[in-house]
Length: 344
Image 1 (tube, rainbow, N blue to C red):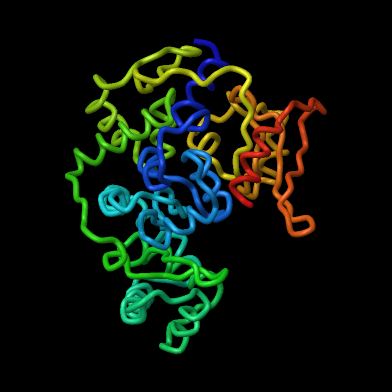
Image 2 (cartoon, rainbow, N blue to C red):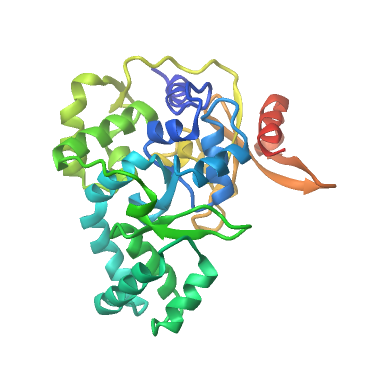
């Protein structure tokens, strides 16, 4: 297998080249997590992995609770299927809390203050509350939201299993009590969770390495190896550049010469520790910028990032602006139309 074929397998595994899912909840479950700190980008990431999805349909899935947005792996906002939220949170919580507490204490949110804030949050969220109103009510209760303390408290509350995000009201996000918003708890033993998480990752992101899985999941390397060992017989093993990659044995590569417009923070790049196969080193700065961690939307051909794009509003209609690396333009009319159909 060469690099081009490996990347085309990833396009197929990630449901980018063609999706078998009719709902965004199904797509989210297949992918495990879809990064969503960029709300607009996260919605498009789900839509392009769902058959004929529109932006309105994604928003409706959030409102009807078939799609959940919450802090999960690596302490980052993600979209998830509701049936995955509890057991994934249980799996990653211990290590993630230990990591987050260091940052939180540095910004003045010690365990005592966090407990006070969590108790107040619990009393305030009898129904969805907008972010600005929630911050005001916390401050009125005596909890200081100075600096990053409010943001840190929300992350802590999500990882502790108290809250998740609810539907938008206007353009503002709301917060809800997780266990009241999501009906039913899906619980797994640690061994079951490790195996399930490994299987989900390698079938939806493969071909990928064990190092990729450990980075994506936030697990230790030993935990990642335990998960892989449990499902190894169900996966295909390939060798590329003297490294072992794992994937679904049922997957076929995406057709050659396909072009896609992927959003910022898309799993096609963010889902791997090593992104050098898809993104050449000389173009890294154009996509990531000044090391601020903000990934721009990308143009992908045959799995290679060949440019960047953005959606702009002109005369009350969305249009697409592009910049190709090396000045090498390609025909992306179909890819542009897919984005415009979704948005308009």
